[in-house]
Length: 202
Image (cartoon, rainbow, N blue to C red; front, side, top):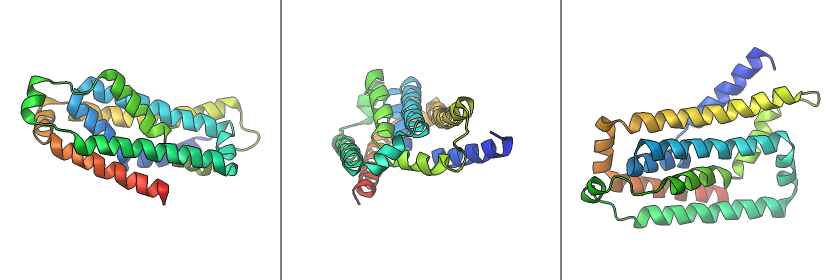
């Protein structure tokens, strides 16, 4: 892959990662609730979920998803159900500053890892996005090195961006203020999840 083509791919991926959405809300939620480590774990597993879709796309699985409506619908509605469950948890969470002060971690690392991965994996729009994106940079003669570079670019940018977000937000100066307003973080997460669910269903 030529340098100019790679820079174009990287730029699109950076802009996509920077766009606010349920993934950012999820990283924010786990960073505030559990601290830096939880935020980083969420970011890393989210990057793995994104990378998995990138790999499937490169291998041609995204075409199968697109051309097999029942399979796509299964993934789409499973994703919608998962997002609704997360939204319900966010709206019904009973958080308070006192509780957070006494118990720094409200979520386990396992939960952070699971929700970070699933918020990416149960988003079938990623498959279609990568199908459209990669088709501009890959051809039938592409080598496995070129395909691997594309996957590594996507996964690395996503992971590094959210790790940066988690690191900045976990600084005590910012984290104390965020913990004071965690109930607003929970509600914002719920709204973001409902929004993306509506987009999936409609």
